[in-house]
Length: 259
Length: 187
Image 1 (spheres, each protein chain N blue to C red):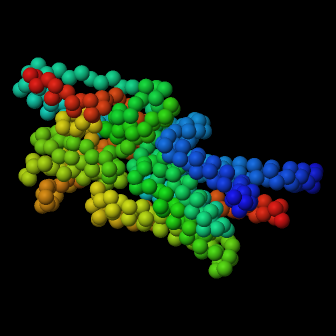
Image 2 (image 1 turned 60 degrees about the vertical axis):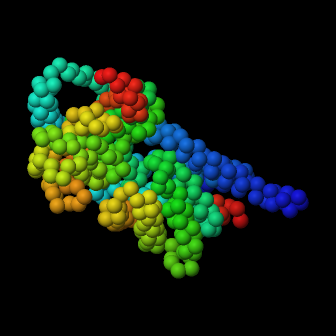
Image 3 (image 1 turned 90 degrees about the vertical axis):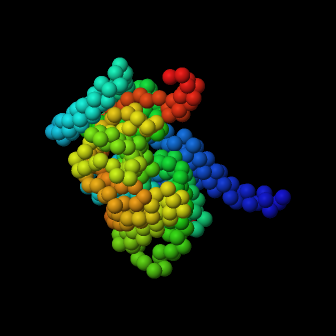
């Protein structure tokens, strides 16, 4: 008891400080660094970026072209099906990019709008150019986006022209690898890639990128290198769109089998 | 006037309690600054989209003249914070703890003089080690292919090591001056 007491007297300060710092660190970890990102956002307000008009415009034209291709293709399908109407989702907010990933292994960006602007986890982010990524964590004034180019983000996509499906996984720059589900897909260089109807994380038909090269000999399935069209490396604004959580939509088909 | 100011500052730091508070304040503030600068990519501070690893620099600066245990604790604390800022798995705790422990074990004063070069060298080595540990964690987790992980590792390790080592003195020198100042006051 005495030795314990003596130890405490000698190391009281260190122990308290150790406990405090460990406690703070754990708290920050559990809250996903929400406080840090809020402070970061607050300090970053004077340094908010200006738009680079030319880049944005070019990217926008490209997006429109892609959308047109997608629309044409979709139009054809709809004519065959007749009477299917899709509601356009309303955008929640346009948010400036305030930061990037705090580590190099993750491809995150930080947007300057959060839950106070109605943003929630699971919403998806577009920019002029195409799909950027998905929101993975939200603080009152910031939101963290997992980019398409992150190796851990996998998205179901389809070739807009021929409707062959596959999924892409990020390659850490503005490239992604698309793996096809079919053995001999009809795909060629320059084809537009959009999100597929099988993707739960994103709504169908969002422009993702275009095919840069195709490797048909790849085993087990052919692969294509996709160039993402959203200018992620010099992105300055992101448009946030709502999207229902994947789990809730998955349960529905079983409950309504008569549709 | 200068002298008066200095003596005031000295008086102010004379009391042990104030010293502890001031030390904690400065240390916490420096961590906060490193954490806040981590998501930025300032012009001239990035290479292929990769910036310096500020938290690693801080752990190196802290551990250079401290015990292994203190180094490990610093790695643990900053690792947890960085986990919160990115993702839980793979964790940064292992890599930053290893950095803290190894830097403290180095006993820099025995081999190297204290200058820009030695701190930059240590940071360079530690950045490579830290990224390698993260890459190994990815390998064990194995939801990416090995080729992908290790080619990306090359890029990250090199870019982050070069940049971190170049920017390390900015964190190290002010902090080191402050801790030295406190040490002389303690004695």
